[in-house]
Length: 98
Image (cartoon, rainbow, N blue to C red; front, top):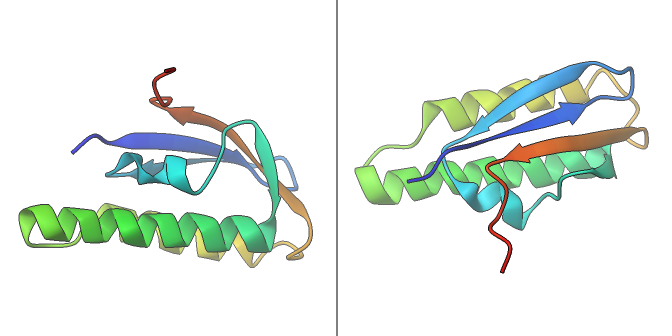
């Protein structure tokens, strides 16, 4: 299962590196795109929950790293107003260009 990382910049300029055990993040977020904190938190945690379930389906157990990343995102998000903006700076690996 391919892993990926994505980097976000919170409204105060803080940068956070995030991990996913699956490329499913690409289905929910776009690099170089800004979202409200509320929308980002919802999309990212939904994607990470889906990633954890993909690991469970393949290996028989959920990915605790995906759950930890979702927890970290939720913990960071509560520090900002839900309508402030967070940017997805990069996603690696990027989706292949077709």
